[in-house]
Length: 229
Image (tube, rainbow, N blue to C red):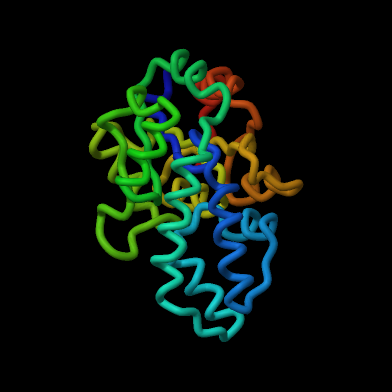
């Protein structure tokens, strides 16, 4: 697979099926706060965004002052649900075993949550210690900003031109493209919706897969074809 020296995985919705759980918790909290929104709409509009940035966007759109306590309440509820219910995306271990390049995780989730989720589903040994959280970089450096992807590539000692990213969200695809990296979209998690693949492509993903088992072949194909960034 000449052409790529590093593959970066997002975590939520790519390695673990957590976005649907977040959508369930957050849609209930927003609906109770006076902003009715379905689980499906949460996944379509806000997947890949931090809860803090979701609240800011909702406040701007609806002119509804949202209590600061929602931040802490969501974190507690979500951590409880994830600890009980989160599962690995099928095929991750198969795919990783057939990808010879360096690998790491670059996520908007906190280091503590990443450690909990990846430990629970048994995927942490595949990536540790190369698991990076945008929240550790400082305030306001989460996706869709490219900072975490550039940080991950730098820590791994690989140029952005030799890096491919696997992302499930429009915000994540935008971040990877802004970092100058090539992107494979993923729609195999439970929060996926009918227009998901089209939106990832429109955002800049070169191709989209719905099964993690297909990833090694797609990476090989992209490596053989130099796309235009």
